[in-house]
Image (tube, rainbow, N blue to C red; front, side):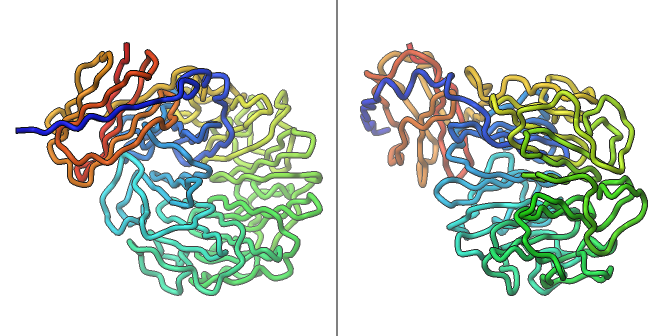
Amino acid sequence: MKNSLLVTLYLVSFLCFGMNSMLQAQSIEGSTHNSIFICANGAVQTVGGNNYGELGDGTNIYKTIPVQIPGFTGVIGMSGGNSHCLFVKNDGTAWATGSNGLGQLGDGTLVNKNYPVQITALTGIVAVAAGPAFSFFLKSDGTVWSVGYNYFGELGDGTNTNKTNLVQVVGLTGITAVAAGGDHSIFLKNDGTVWMAGRNFYGQFGNGTVINHNIPIQVPGLTGVTAIAAGGAYSVFLKNDGTVWATGENGYGQLGDGTQYNQRTVPVQVIGMTGVTAIAAGGHHTLFLKNDNTVWATGYNSAGQLGDGTITTRTTAFQIPGLTGITAISAGDFHSLFLKNDNTVWSVGDNGSGQLGVGSVVDKTTPVQVQGLCSGPLATVEVEEAEHLSIYPNPCTNQLHVEVADFASTTLNLYTMQGQLLYEMNLDQTNTTLALPTLKAGIYLVQVKSPKGILVKKIVKR
């Protein structure tokens, strides 16, 4: 006979209303086939390719309009790889979803995930960086940890062996930023110096050679660096004087030095770029944000990722027309993202997987606004297995019953549709009754985490 546990939720009414006006995009990230957005309330929305579950919404179905990761909040940073995504929360925990065939999710397995899993071996994380199939985690103590693909030594652990368990990057402390390229890794220290590991075939290390290294080495003569960006096979550096320097592969003019096909093995200055406050590197194109909130671009433009209305490659940076008031930029492999000072997000370029978030899979050569982002009731995908979870009645009035076949190590969370956590509890019975006398009428999410996975059910409160 099943037991019943009565739990009364005394919810403050302001938690349930007045949220829509507060929901704004505050962070953007472009990856190979995806785009990721953090809303002002710490919820996450994703769009684009999803063959391996990299969108984290509990499905493997691609999306052309951003969807919210159900019940996943408190996120302050993210990074997207080829088919996996990394997240860091405000409590210093790290989470990952998507492809895991080379151990890049860092959970010690080779099993793909379609909902974020916590990397329990890590705490005190302040930033993450995802390469195509490898991952980096920067800790608050300035050390860096890595996992995944390591054929060229990009993990920086002194070996060329893939890892499914986290390893510390050798010899690095005082690190403030990490960037992951196609097969190389960049580390910025608190003294303004830059260090590299991995593949150096195109001179992306900037040390005058094309020799690979599996232990980080310093880029000689490069100081005063405040930001780093890693392209497919090239590296970009922003200095404290607002100038930009670049090195490595240049087959499409992505270094912005006025040449094409001339790879560089030492950093060269990007022509005309002064007053720069942020940089972003894609597969073969580079973006620059200036202190007047304009955006400039150079490099490959096969899908219109440079945003000038053409598919013409550029070898020197030009201003993207009509794009003003920009506060943040991000470059995917072949698409670009821009965050405006009104908290809207604009996208351009390759859209074959829906990564532009405009409801289609048609490429765009001029920036278009991402649709349905962090406004109104967010689209939420339910993840449910009938034999595992039963929630009834639905719609409900004053009581809601939750039955879980296996309640061991099971937790229940109640969220608003905007992703705000209202209540959480550990289940110690197979049958739990929630009393909802103060919960306002509306639509909510019940999330159950158990050994069988994470299940999400949308409920209606009358």
